[in-house]
Image 1: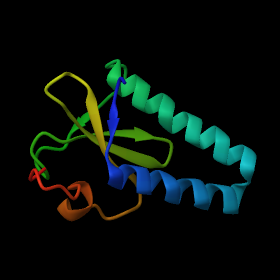
Image 2: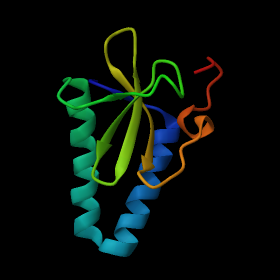
Image 3: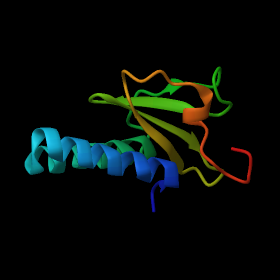
Length: 105
């Protein structure tokens, strides 16, 4: 796999899908979800403009896609690990970027 998605990011995806389907319909849900997964592929291929977010969380980067921010870090094997996917208008404290993990990241 070209990238890894953390459990918190999967929960974010589920929320995005539910909201988009409810407000905009099934077709827009499909289009938006495809756009997010295309973004993950582009991050993995180093084809996105990424902002260093280390001032909030060491080793963290963010990438904007439509109205969402994809937070990720690079794994030792070179793959991106998608940490969270948050709406651009959210106030993003460290707790939201930091995934729940026993490894401290």
